[in-house]
Amino acid sequence: MPNKKFQLIILAALLVFAIVTVAVVVVNNNQSNETVHDDQPSIEGQPTIGEADAPVQIVEFGDFKCPSCKAWEEVIFPQLENDYLDNGDVSYSFINVLFHGEESKIGSLAAESVLEHDPESYWTFHKKMFEEQPAQNHDSLWITHDKMAEIAEETTSMNVSQLMSDLEQETMAEQVNQDMDLVEEFDVQFTPSIMVNGTMMEDPFDYEALKALIDQELEG
Image (tube, rainbow, N blue to C red; front, side, top):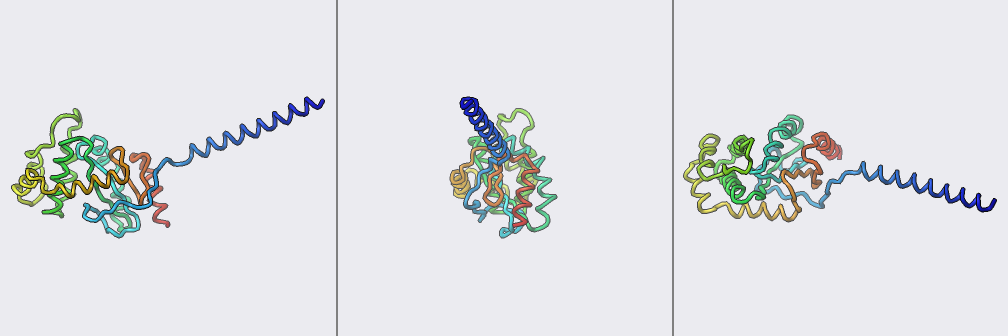
């Protein structure tokens, strides 16, 4: 009889342990794997839509050569713009990432040149860059000096000879290097990486999660 009582106690303990284990697993599965940083990247000098002091700041770490960034630009950004960027409460900034070698570098240098000499045309140039990225054969060479001149002629009013000079002399290298310092500081591992007030999204294509985080920040 004592043995049976002992067995019942053991079974009860195992049952409690199992229930607790399941609860922990469920909680962990429901928790976000988003990374929270103490600070938001500085957007001083960065191309920004909206007010720099907006209560919610969204930062994209992106690469003009990156096919996922093209997809984000075409699928997610229009929703973000429509839902939030037009009301003044949310700002959006873009930080260059050079994960795809020389072409990433040329694209970043060109974009920084446009930002410097014709800032009002920057976002038109930015959008056109992603439009021109090949939908197929992503590894093909397309970001060249001549292509940057072509896009600038179509989207900006700047002197294209100035752009070509900036590319050849890498005049905007300091600005690009500052971006790469931020990439390292915030341990950016993939593009696009999206941060909202210091929180790095786990999945930049989960727009509902992005909306939820923005709304949470707006509510304070």
